[in-house]
Amino acid sequence: EPEVTQTPSHQVTQMGQEVILRCVPISNHLYFYWYRQILGQKVEFLVSFYNNEISEKSEIFDDQFSVERPDGSNFTLKIRSTKLEDSAMYFCASTAERSGNTIYFGEGSWLTVV
Amino acid sequence: EDQVTQSPEALRLQEGESSSLNCSYTVSGLRGLFWYRQDPGKGPEFLFTLYSAGEEKEKERLKATLTKKESFLHITAPKPEDSATYLCAVQARSGATNKLIFGTGTLLAVQP
Image (cartoon, rainbow over all chains, first blue to last red):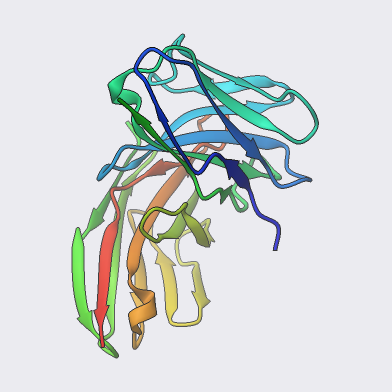
């Protein structure tokens, strides 16, 4: 079964450092997402990406965050200057269609900011 | 504001003891309601999508149903391997994209 893959699985970084989280969505999918889950809290939407541009972003997704699809397979989330409150599990997701259907999630990248 | 509320927060069952999890939602036009299973430290694993009131879907011991205000995930004769957090999420028609709005989940523990 096709799957969304994410790297790294776990990263520890110093506050103020830049972090890049990487994702390889399912190959024929067109819509890509980043979500995050702070420990013990609900999964929260960050950003959606379609046709090489951001379609929608949440209030969480401020100027410190950016996304990019540098080639035909990778989808990245960059946090420019990490804060302690950025510590969370970050999930990449993808789907083939805008309407309903199945949205597949990766296993997540656990980010710890110290 | 679109919102999802799940109950109970946690549920402990004996193996074989059937039960139901609830997901109440408020959304400005429902495009889809999703159920996911999440194991500790893992990503959400897709279970079902329901689109309209009255719809039902089944997978092994799980059955999901949908009304205009809520969805139920029925677990029949659960086994210990069904232990996980079950997440409900909605997708609104009004959104620019098909983002999901999640509830906080129900932590299910099935004891042998």
